[in-house]
Length: 86
Image (tube, rainbow, N blue to C red; front, side):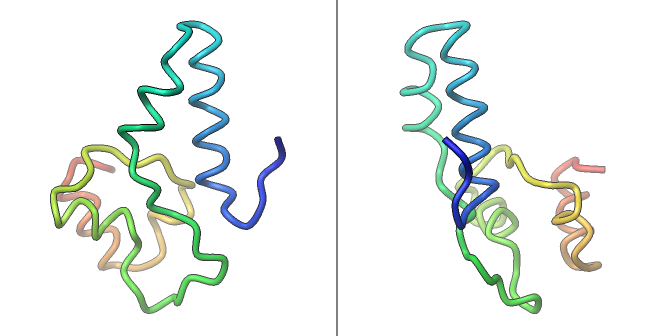
């Protein structure tokens, strides 16, 4: 299934499906636990990234994202580094 307007979320689900091929049933477990943090087709460049908000609110322990998202601004870099992403 090719990505639609939410490429990172779609690619993450594809990653989960590939993991499910190795361990059947894993897709359902991962999909149920993983909050859908991306999806805005045109994210406002001045807004906080959804994964940063999720970390700050203790709603996520990890985030799968493109490297370019981590460098969208100093605020994002500082917060991601606070959670161990370098």
